[in-house]
Picture (cartoon, protein in one colour):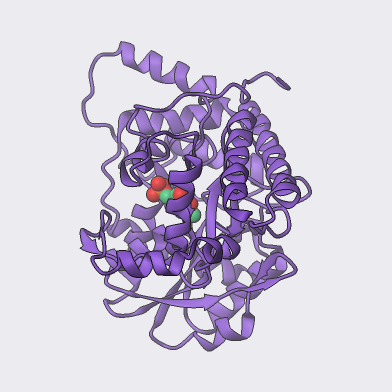
Length: 426
Ligand SMILES: Cc1ncc(COP(=O)(O)O)c(C=O)c1O
């Protein structure tokens, strides 16, 4: 074990109603599971400062409503502001324009309710985080997808296509910075160009920076709010949380800010935050005492990226990965060869004669060839991942693998996938 905290010992989460481990077993009818590598949370014990703060609070055995409405510099907000200034150099968070909410989604939806009339368009560069499509659905808006270019194993914006889609009915653009699922850490130049185009076309930038801490060695997270052009920054709202960095998504606490008072107020007016005492406390304890834990965690994930990228290139010829991801703890894997081999399209066509119900919407949803590959890995390798279809245009031939687990579990998963593919590749 290298370092003070133990990320190496596999941590058993089975039987805790975990979306990452328990849900895929149920949904994919798996008889066993080697690795749950689905939704973006981590398989590690949380930072000790978080557990200590929660334990202490539990001694006060009263759980009345928590005051989160104060607009001024509460201890909670001071913690967020200090963390952002110290860690990422964000110096312009005004406590009066910092809102607290139950999740990054809740914040984005609040802005969309304020800024996007029903039927208007939301511009996104795809493939992009699946949850944004849910935000679009909840606000009765329409996704306008600009497919990114895949150049030498790395995604880039297709600027001409992006601008061509900036019609007057596009009111906001959701930016994923850094990018889930393709793992780009956008550069200052790229973000500036993104922001300038949006400003020119009267489109507000909703910058989701929830993955900001996970950048690979040699890469950098550039907060949108630190761009040089004040007009570009004033045309944006940033959404963040400790929920990815410290794996606290079940605690339901996030926050947003804008240098633009009007955008902040409009979002806050639509922000129905039912916060929990424990969530706010966990977040506060993460920022006040979790930096050493996080540094070690980020380095560990970086090692997992190196390990996975090399392992797949050396041992699993039917899977294709590009350059090592620059950010997030997610791998984006081209599975077209597997789809061909198992005749995934035919499997999907057969299943679509009576399409399964999508639990997110309660409606039947047609399955795709990538869904079938994902199911195939769950059933034949006992490894649960996410189908690329969930991530919009450009995800059709991919699966997403969550690497935020012990190296032992990661290796077991890759070994199992390699073994399952060997059986069919003869
Ligand atoms: C880019 C991105 N935004 C938002 C979320 C969800 O955020 P929250 O749980 O705070 O709503 C996720 C979770 O995976 C994510 O990857």
